[in-house]
Length: 434
Image 1 (tube, one colour):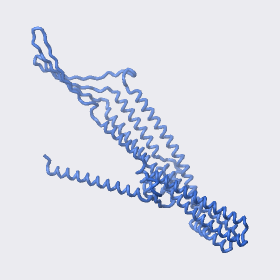
Image 2 (cartoon, one colour):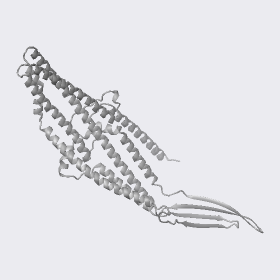
Image 3 (cartoon, one colour):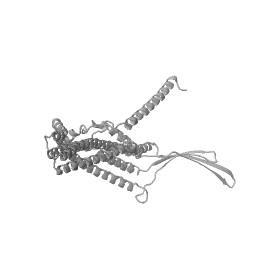
């Protein structure tokens, strides 16, 4: 019977299990509620990982590898075998005699096969876990990239609407001046053309915004037809990406997740080679024999049997499997080196792009941008007040619009380049990598 202390311990363990299960359910519901609400820089990466089917599939691959690890934990290669047999013997002048035989045999591994299998299975688990981490990182980066595309599209629509409204005011003022004889017909045509082009640009920007929102909804597992996503945030690059970019300019010692995955697969293949090599050692079978013959004699015996291995292809020697695993290990090693070179090149390219875009964005100070915004807002008023001709207003307004659009494009490119730097440098993206 259980002691009182044992009962208390069992009850405490059960209660703790229930509490942990309740907390896990609450945490899962909280995460689901966060991912079902508005999309922000802080939750987009985590929600993209949560919704990724590739991540879900890779998590099942990890569970499968853990199942292989569990299978490798068995101590005996096979279950004990018990055999019982009987025989009746008769002879002339002798009464019938009954012989009874009982034998217990057990196969035993003597070549360290179990330890080798465990090492191979553990290496397989590590490789799948690293691949799961890489898959989750890629899913988070894809969500962050799509998030930046949406934020940039939202700002572009806002700018396009302001430009359309400004060109509309210019068109109205020029048409009024034409009616009073203060403007030529060609100026009115030019103003109408600019207003039409501004409307077309605004419609194109709205289409791009809808496409970006749809792409982000797909990555987050949302139903795009249920309504537009509520997306909030600013076009700010991934924190830490600039430092990684500047470091990459002078050093290429980066060990990205892709390389770690391939190296883990290489080690798993090498461990499999060892396990297959040790499996070639014949297993020893030990048996105990008990016999009761018709003369009421008991015979006890011990037996040892060992298979005789024959060279390939007479018997199975795992030669083909060993050659395959060895080739796969060499293949993974070559791919790891190729991935290292590729990621170093991509990091250098992304770092150069990010630093160039950073210089471009920093070239327009907050004061310059504010003056440009103010001038853009005042051009039409200056023309309406007669201090600018329609032609001068149109030229100045077009130049200011190009500055604002170029600045927005540079900020968008800077954010996307920071995502590429984060991917190549292996930066974390949970919480938007802020």
